[in-house]
Length: 405
Image (tube, rainbow, N blue to C red; front, side, top):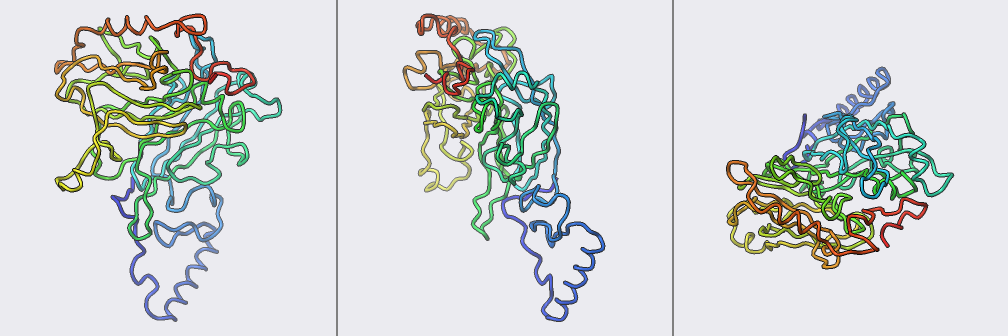
């Protein structure tokens, strides 16, 4: 894999020489080469192809060829056990599909090709669409990185995948450049469907077609664990609420979308995503972080360090994403630490889960049952417990926002 540390590659000095005649000769040779080969040729690793080729327009400028290729599957999962809603998921194999989908990781300078295979039936997609003339398909739409319209994942660009078909999307994590002023693409982002149900893919998101993406800059501190927390409508975390938002086995916890667990001292990274129509705040008990791109402070520059806020609560709007990095149990030790939205009526109605910090031997500390019991004693709403109320997306009828109300 070829990547940049921080800067983009610069054009080699004197590539055409100082003589005008020599420059003309070189250009002439290049033109003959293009014509004979019939393929694109780049003057350097940052250039777009000069001659027309079969892949023109398929890759963003700076991506000469993919550094990696992945297979991604969109599949139908078992319906929600509480609401009976349709659930869809992305996976690197059909068997590992989930919601959220797999967390994607890139390094600035990297170009990634993802082939999406649509294994969701036309019958299921028909049930989710809000207009009978809307095309049936799924897609990948990504935030933060670079792509052409062929990889936009929208209906109007034709970049979606019909049932039983496949399509390759290309993402480019453009590096920061002091020469051009490009800020780069390092950060915490997300990807999601933009087609299922309607033009904006609302029903696709409500069904589970979303996931996290982190783009790192060379030299970034790496975490021991990474979790995605998507805060959505109907007071949901990863389309779950109340007791369903924390299903950790207290004897043998297995990390997953509803089981946030780490050993004391581990560096834990959260990709925080805002879905739907509501505003939220993201708060975890007993821990705080630096409000920087990576959530950590690097270096000993006192003026810089003193200018960085340390926070334990951050506002999250629809479509927003940011990263949180904490050291599990830092100064507070093992325990069961609440993680929730701090809009009080949201947390009261079940928008809360738990970060379980294990001891140094990897053992679950006592007290977990108290948290589990509290989650099961949420106030009644809509004529029943919060566990009986629809999760994010709510009613999967022709009204894509029915679940918000």
